[in-house]
Image (cartoon, rainbow, N blue to C red; front, side):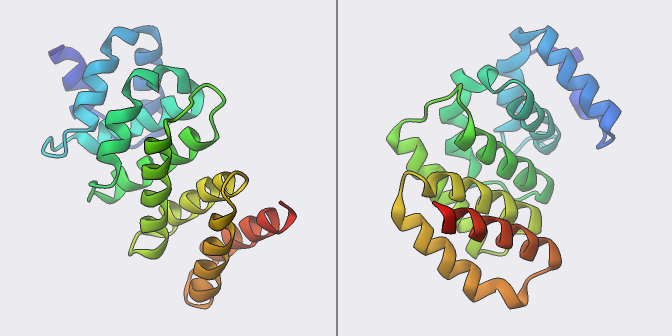
Length: 179
């Protein structure tokens, strides 16, 4: 393992400049991707959530870089407990679901849908719920049953949720009603 890269992740913080710097480093040095994924998917590593920040940014800006690692990311996604990692992985799930660069196997797609549903009906915070809704909304274009499931979950939870949840829910309902 490249200890310099490992230490950069360990010493990182949530500031935009710091995260952008690490993302740019990985973009310029794609050979560190296996290490980044190894740290980010090792839930026993105390810095895994910091690696997830970078994985999340790569999913947004250069999804193709994740292609060799999609299976391990999807396999690990449901097991995160750290709130920051869950938030980051919810964004990764969204970017994977909407990417034109990545074609998920039927099994991985099913796993991603299941994870998003779990975040949506579970105790996740607002951001993971919102990104789960957006990913599920995308999949609802291909799977009709998801539309009805989304409607039911949103209807059941709407009144008890925050303004952020309600805003995302309104947007998602509008989209699935047009589909």
